[in-house]
Amino acid sequence: MASAHAKKTRAGEVVRTLVMGLWLPALFLAGLLFSFLLAFHDPTPHHVKVAVAAPPAATAQLQHQLDTAIPGGFTLQPFDSAAEARSAVLNNDAVAAFTPAPHHPQLYGAKADGAAMESMIRQVFTSATQQTGATLGFHELVPTRRGDALGTSPFYLLMACTLPAYFLVVAMQRAVGFSRRAHVATMLLAGAVTTVACYLAGAYGMDAIPQHPLAMLYLFLLTQSVSLTSYGLVAFLGPFFPGAAVTLFIMLSVPSSGLTVPADLLSGFFHFLHPILPMGNAADALRNVNYFDDRQLGRPTAVLCAWIAAGTALIVLGYVKQLRQLVREAQAGITRYVSAPPPEDPTVELPEPVALPPHRHHFGEQPAMLTGRVSGPVGEPLAGVTITVTDAHGRQLLHTRTDQNGEYAATGFHEGFAVVVAGGPGRQPVATRLLLSMAAPVNQDFVLTPRQQTVPGYVNSGRG
Picture 1 (cartoon, rainbow, N blue to C red):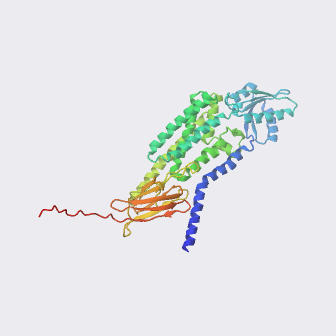
Picture 2 (tube, rainbow, N blue to C red):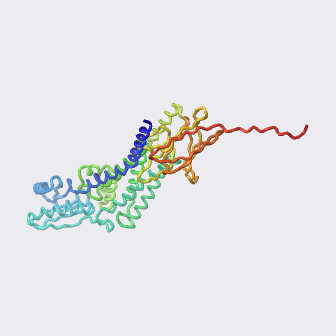
């Protein structure tokens, strides 16, 4: 019976270890299949705004013709003259302008809105005019920069701001000696360094973005939106914060950014996310600074600042949550404890030995590989006993102490033999050699006896 129970327990530990090790890679797989693939596999126009230099009746007739070909694909706006229609494109109020004429209709495009968008519009309006026997003329109103031929180069700069900001938060979880203030200051400084590097590379190295201070501002706002929000999620999601951060800032932000595929060609869900998530707003801001004379920057600025404010609020609430936890533990008489291991991204972090709070394991946290209890000769728990784990070559892997119940726990060891030593003031140390494995957690108890006290004898000087 005991053997069957042990096998069942071991099997449960193996399954739990596999689940906790594979949940984030599984999230990436699902994101790539159902986020990227879903967003990019069939770009279709959705209510693309086109300015038309024609009376309302003629515009309505053209609207009906386009709706027949692509229902809901285009929204035509009538203007009194071709100059006003072209101004709508230059002011970023429309992505193209169309001037109908019996034999030589003209289409005015903006490659700055994306080469894919311009190609789609040219194809649709060429097909529409050919039905009347006319030849469509095309004119480029807003061409792209030399280093941004397809209008997608800023995507790589925004990714260069996003990924380091996320991985910095992962790295900060290992800086356990840092306070929250030091963590935040580090993220601000790293964001500034990342911003300057991306700006110099994009503006001066590749001519992909303008040499304009506003471009630096929006790159910096993006880094802080990602890093502060990710950091704020740690206190509430613990080891699951990488999944939430990756979902928000990679799996959903990249396809909805409007850079790889223009936002108006995305499906409804990703089109809805575009003005909400940070990357899409940073993309719009850079494009407006780059090509449209700093117009329509209100919404991107407000949304990016809102993400920063939300991240700051989460950090403050996490601090308050920690204070309340400390008060509750103090009221319960718990005055010393081993802090929880830092949350980390299992796809980038290698195992590292770390102490765990005994009897406080939740799904998603690292399971204990080594546990035990240290007691005296009559079974009394010994608090504050030093537990040292070394590898087979004598290199120290872990140094921790027992809690008020005499218990300890640890994890993160590489599979193999290790030496565990328990010792405390006035106690005879005890050592044992164990095989540590994630698949087979080890419980090792110790009984420490008092040291033998040597009483100095009386030394006879030889005098009578």
